[in-house]
Every structure is written in C-alpha cells, then in structure tokens.
Length: 405
Image (tube, rainbow, N blue to C red; front, side, top):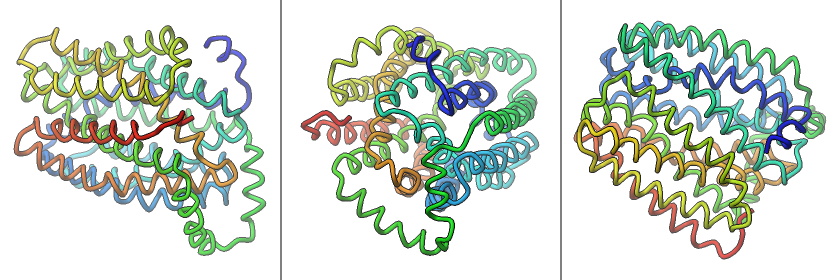
C-alpha cells in the first residue's frame, strides 16, 4: 500500500496529500457538534429539523452539481464551491447563538454537495479503475490519522467546556480549510475528461442540460449494478446521518459518558480501522466484495444492539462497541465507495454522480427530522431504526449473485 501511495501522481496525489488540511480541523470539532448545538438551546427535534432542511436543499445542489462541474471544470468548481460551502459556514458556526444561526449555516453548507462531485471527478477522471479502491483506502486512512488530533479538543473541553472550545475550533477550521482549498487549486490541473466535458457543453443552454437528466436517470435505471449501488448508498446515508448526529447525545445524556471523552472514542475507532486497513484489508481482496460488505453490515447490526443494551459508566462495554463499529466500517465503506465509482459510466460521471447524490439525499432528508422526534421520545429509538435499516441493506446486498465490482 505504501508503494502504491508513493507512486501516485497528478490530481490523485494532490487531492490525497491536501486532505489532512480539511480532515484535521473537521475531526477536531466533529465529536462535539451536536452537544454544541444542545448547549446553545437547540432541541433534539430542532437538530433533526436542521438536518432535514439541509438535506432537502442538498438535493437541489446535487442536481446542479454535474451541470456546474461540466460547465466550469472540476478544478474551478471545487475551489469556489469549497470556499462558499465550508469557509463561510465555519465562521457562522463559530459565532452561532441559537437555532436560526445553525439553520443558515446548514443551508450554505449544503453547497458542499456540488464540490463532492467535482472533487471526486477531479481525481477519478484520470485514474485507472483498478486504482480507485486503493485510493479510497488511503482517503479513509488520511481521515483516520486526522482523528488522532481529537484529544487536543477533548483536553480543552474538559477544562473550559464545550461552547468556548468549539467556537475556537470552528475558527481554526476556517483557516486550515481555506488554505487547503487554495493549495489544491494551485497544484492541481483540470482533468482530461473535464476539458472534454467543458468543450462539449460550452454552448449548451443550462435548461437543456437540466432536461438531459431524463436520459441520465434512464441510464441509471437500466443498469442493475448502478441501481444496487444507489440503494445501498441511500440506506447507508440514512444510517450515517442518524449515528453521526445522535450518538453524542445518547452517550452523554443516557450512558453518562463525560463530554470530554467524546474526543477519545474516535481515536480508538481510528486506531482499529488503521490497523485493519493497513494489515488486514489486502488479505481480503481475494474474497467477493459483497461477502466482505455483508460481514461489515452484520458487525454493524451487532454493534448497534450492543450499544442499545449498554450499561452506564461501563468503559469496556463502550470500547467493545467502538471496536466492532471500526471493523465494520473498514469492511464496508471503502468497498461501497468503490462500488459506486466503478458502476458509473465515465463519460457522464459528473451528471450521474450528481443525480446519485440527489436521489440519496431526497430519500434520507425526512429521516433527520424523524430521528429527532424519536430521540425526543427516547434516545435509543434512532438506533433501533438503524438496526432495521441495516437488515434491509443486508437483504439488498445478498440478492447479488455475482461480483459487484
């Protein structure tokens, strides 16, 4: 894997090496986002409402992502989109006072759906298909390495409390992320596919491009692999939304985990995932990907049930939950990402990817508010919902009779 990393060139190398400038500040504040909102008076159902509204707007952003990416190029779209969708919201979050501040920030942050398409196209376009999965492994590894900075945040939260520390973390995120976006633009080049698409749509009216989504949708619908990838990623999007948002509240308010400890859970998870990705993952490539993904889903189900029956103040119990969650993620997520990328027709990658995102977000957007309502009634209920969704995901996956990529 290290030989592969050192041999990377072009946009894939630039995108990968600049990622820590985004990943480190993101992982510093991420464990405390929900608690930060909670301490500023935002209720569980209001947190869910912000998530749902943000996701609904992301649907429209995703529909325009492919058009904008093809029109203005992968490189410029990524720069401008990132500056708007991350630099501005991090400053708003830093000075937020109530529900309305968070809502405005969530609306602006929704533009990241555009750059998720343009950034992926920027490095995928000129990358061999066989190299996609290893690059995704390294993307996850760089994100996991960033998690090891989280104890810094945990230490200061323990001393000064959640709100003042998270405000500072958001300001730092603004500085580091903005630097990352500029450096990436300077040292990247427009992909060959991007140049072709810019020339192809140069004189095409925007409305004609929008109407062209009908053909893109039919192209997806006719491909069994793309449909399966779409269903799996849509379900996973809901599961990730629920777990990522409501775990902190459940752990601190129900299981009585100290708030500062939330920074240490990602470290244990990252350490196990790193060990798995660097040592175990390569040995599993000989097995069918859907079998490995199924084992990952099964581990996720076990970990959710384990969390639901967790006693208060039991650190070993929580450590076991984190370990199962980490192994499940290492088995499932890189393969799911590679499945989606490899299932997409390269010529229409931007528009297919944006339509993928729009459909996934449209499906998942109501679940933010639903999970918020469930959490208001009982903070265990969102995780019961996740167990049901994981079972559905397993059934969809096992219906495949051949290798999915």
